Length: 140
Image 1 (tube, rainbow, N blue to C red):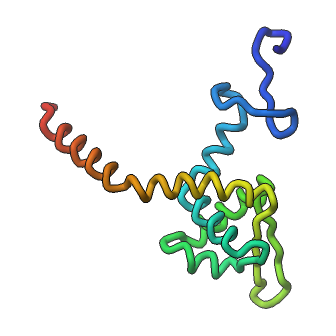
Image 2 (image 1 turned 180 degrees about the vertical axis):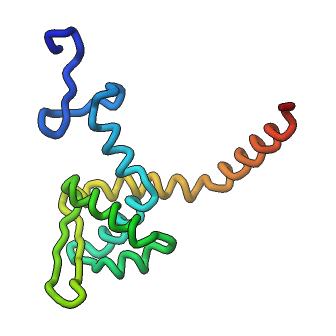
């Protein structure tokens, strides 16, 4: 506890985070790692591990991702210590990425979420259709 009676926020600098504390950086981390693009990038990089993957190959394998969104996703992975970036001096420069050990440890949990989503997508679609039908029936 702090002197003001508030619980201390811990993070990677001081220990385990607390998702239910509004000031905890865990919330921001979950926002970053919980995106479809992060899940896809981690999967592609994990499949290649320990080898590197070039930016262009990542973009090719992640259908629908824009260059900007892929750049943001990879920048966040590098910033969080989940991936490493290497630039090969050339014209144009060749940029390579690979997961760190910490990043590799994220693949299992993300794979479980991806598997769950794929396995239950039909049920989710049916629930969404029921909810939309119900909304259309409600007045105003």
